Length: 365
Ligand code: AMP
Ligand code: MG
Image (cartoon, rainbow, N blue to C red; front, side, top):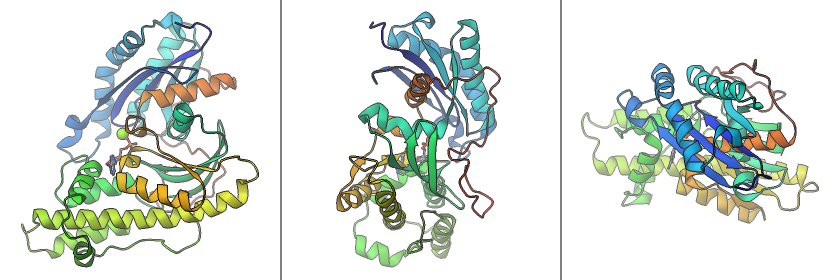
């Protein structure tokens, strides 16, 4: 073990993954354990907050021990503890944060409360040392945002969803199609079964909300409603496998068009605002939906046209994980951005507190 490099334990419990990792300051992930609660929530077709919190509570201790064992370290080798302190489901956030604080107090280690969104946004620095400033498309189950990462703790939010998050729209649409939870990956698999793409698009046309408008905001609830209307128009019990594949295909193509349009605007704004400040302009995609191959392809060709680099973290680091939380901890430790043990769990915690409030009740911070 190289003792000159700092190492941090990272804890993530903001949604339905109990995740703990040990990461070293040179970016080496010494351990990375993720326990997904798919079975616990499957019957409900979505994450149930109370069940999530209880499940985190059941597993957190053994995951922390497992992550230390896998990394071959003990508490005395750690330089700090980082835990997600928001935004997220408050019961779950509290479980991870209290565990982290208890370890920090008992072992007299610094504690760092991490913004979950910053974990996603900085993953590209853990994996690829991307330099600030860079453009971020964050697409997950709870959030859909376009951000500029200017520095650690310093973000500009250029776009957000006015209603549903993209992952949520994938999951709800998949549910309407009768696909099992989690909907996103299952919908992608079904779309790959579409036999006649041109016909599928004609049979199931879908709207592209906000496409062609200025700005970088998103809206997905109309898309979900259009999926519902298509399903309801079909004779009852008559949603064939072919229909589902066609509808899933049309849905995925439509999402691609929306992202292409919104990201095009963001790229133009980024290049005109930041080109002097960065050697290689880069777009980073992160969050669970970034696992979708069609979306990755769309973004890759968009960045190619704009002479930008494109970065998508490996699949295991796209969805929620402890390594990204430990990494933010390491970045904040370097900047001496430590927290005291009275830091509170936050259900909402915008990365850019100055961002203009958007209309619509369901705006995600
Ligand atoms: P996260 O909120 O970052 O944990 O990511 C979970 C979200 O990503 C859920 O809404 C999933 O349905 C979605 N997701 C995961 N894989 C895919 C995929 N291949 N295509 C679309 N959405 C996905
Ligand atoms: Mg998750």
